[in-house]
Length: 492
Image 1 (cartoon, rainbow, N blue to C red):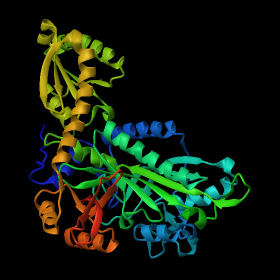
Image 2 (cartoon, one colour):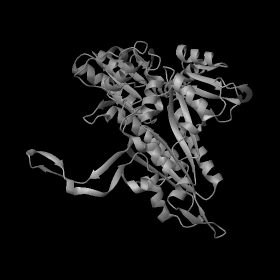
Image 3 (cartoon, rainbow, N blue to C red):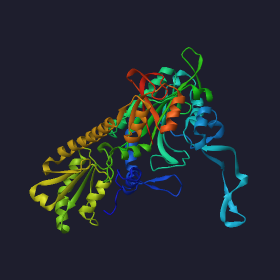
C-alpha cells in the first residue's frame, strides 16, 4: 500500500493521527473540532459499547434516554457543576432562521425567534436527570434507581484531537440514586471495578485504580474515582471515572424520599462514564509503526482469510477450502472475513489488514492445498507459522487468547518500566523530562502544592491509588510530612 505512517519515535502525535486517518477509523468534519467516526472505527466502538452494556445490565442497571438540551436555570442549580462546565458550554438562544432581506440568498437568525430561556447543549446530564428524578422518587421503595444512558455530549474544546478530545463525542453516563451514603459509595466503587475489568480484560490495557484529589475531582462530586492508563509515549490517560456525588444534586433539585421510618431525607447519588476517548487509548496502548493493533476481544474481525491463486479455476479451488475454514471458525464464535476481492493483489490485502489491526491473517494458496497446510500470521508480533489445515480451529482459538494475553503483558511491562519512585523535586523533574511515565512521589495533601507542581512541570496528580501502601516521607515540594506516595504524570 502507498500509505506511510510516521514512526512513533519521530513524531508521536503525527504517528497517532496517521493511524486514525489511514486505518480508516475517523476523519475530520466540516464542523470545527468535531469528527466523523468511520465504519472501521465505529465497529470497534460498537464492540466496546456492547461489552460494557452487558456489564452494566449484569450489575442491575437499565438504559434510558434524556434530552440533549438543558434549560439554563436547571444547569445553574448545582453551582459547582455549572461553574465547572461553564467555559465549555454551547448555548442555544434562537429557534428559527429567516431569509436576509438585504441578501435573499442568505439566511440569518430571526431576532423575533429568541427563546424565553436559553438552552445548554448537554455537556453532562446531571441537571436534566436530577430534575427528572424528582418526579420519580417518593419513598425508599423507589430506590435504588440504577439508570444508564448512551448519548452524545458537547464540550466546546479549543484544541481538539481525534477521539482524545473533540467538541462532540459519544459516551455513556450512569446516574444512580440511593437511600444511604454507604450504598452510593458501594455503587461508585463497583462501577470503577467494572471499568477496570473492561480496560484490562477486554482492552488489554493495565490501569491504576484510585481517587482524584480535590483539584482534579468532578465538578459537584464529593469524591471521584478513576482508572489511569499509561500510553506508549509515557503520558497518562484518564480512561474512566466514577463519582460519588453525595447529596449535592439531590439538594440542588430537592429530590427527597420517605425512608422506612417515614422521615423525609435527600437521596444519595452517583454518576460514572467512559467515552470514545477509549478509542484513543486503544490506539496508543498497542499500535505500532505498521498501523493499528486491536486486542482480539474487541476486534470486529478477528481473522481474515486471503486467497492466493492464478485464474478463476485456482480461486474456486482455494475458496472451497477457505469457506470451510471460515464456517468452522464461525462455529467457535470467531469473527472471520474472507477477502476474495479480485480487484487487489494479495500483497496489498496483507498490508491493508495489517494497517487495520486484524489480529490473525490466514493465507491459503493452491500450493498450500497440495501440502494440506495454511500460513497463519499474528498481528501483534508480525510473525508467521505454517500449520496443517485440520488444526486450524484449535490453533486459531488458542492464538487469539495468546495475542490478548501478550498485548496486556507487553503494556504492563512497559508501564512497570516507566513507573519511577522519587524522593526529591530535582529527581522528579529529571524523570519527567528524561523518562516520563508515572512518577510516585510524596505530596503534602494541599491543593496549593499540587497547583504549584502543575504550573512548574505540567504534571498533575493522576490519582491516590486505592489500597495504597502507607509509608512515612516528606513532600517533594514543600518538605512537609506525608504518609503515602501519589501518582504524578503529564497527561492527555
